[in-house]
Amino acid sequence: MQEDNAQRPLVAGPDDGPEPPFPIRVAGKVIKGFGRGSKELGIPTANIPITGLSVGGHSDLSSGVYLGWAGLNPLSDTSLPSDTSTSTSSASAAPPHTYAAVLSIGYNPFYKNTARSVEVYLINDFGGRDFYGAELRLLILGYVRPELDYVSVEKLIEDIRTDIRVAERSLGREAWRRWREEEWLVDWGRDLEVVRPEDVGITG
Ligand SMILES: Cc1cc2nc3c(=O)[nH]c(=O)nc-3n(C[C@H](O)[C@H](O)[C@H](O)COP(=O)(O)O)c2cc1C
Ligand SMILES: Nc1ncnc2c1ncn2[C@@H]1O[C@H](COP(=O)(O)OP(=O)(O)O)[C@@H](O)[C@H]1O
Ligand SMILES: [Mg+2]
Image (cartoon, rainbow, N blue to C red):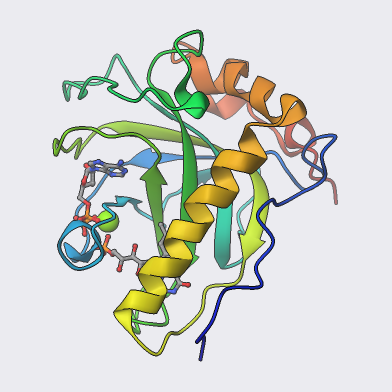
């Protein structure tokens, strides 16, 4: 049971860029969850289905908290909320509809879910708007920590807030920032199926 996160490191992964098995590419449509993200935690998460999840050539993804860049399909039917962020991780030169992201994969031990889920917090203020049904692509670049149980909801929130800071600092490094321009993430005209295990650094 997690009680204190004061000792956590504030960056994840090496300064010179992501290391194997990253990057891992994951895609899916935003679906409904339990509605706890915005109501109980004040941190909305875009849930994507784990069944039929398109993981770039890789069918298994271990449970845990990860960071990376996320893209929302500007061509999808759902009209996307506008990007209102002014933070460094969403600098105006960055490709549109891409965001720094932290995500949790697993059973949410604090809530004891019976189904595994993938939940993504996009580090951007969408002004209270949602984007259910939109297609989301995730370029996962690093592992942050295992999913944990907590003594209180406040401690869970505190750790997720720290995850967000870790993601901002980690992705802000030169060798991590440039992945935001990565073709698969920004080019929605390109077919998902062309992504092969060897393309994403996974062999064997
Ligand atoms: C960065 C991040 C880290 C998380 N870490 C944990 C965790 O350690 N333990 C846990 O039980 N849930 C964790 N969660 C999941 C939240 O509990 C979950 O997103 C929340 O319950 C909202 O669920 P909902 O989308 O079904 O409403 C994390 C979520 C995010 C975005
Ligand atoms: N910054 C954000 N990151 C992720 N989702 C967001 C964000 N801002 C708004 N949303 C929207 O909020 C929705 C609701 O999230 P949440 O409260 O976790 O409910 P649910 O349990 O249905 O996932 C997400 O599906 C998404 O459409
Ligand atoms: Mg959610």
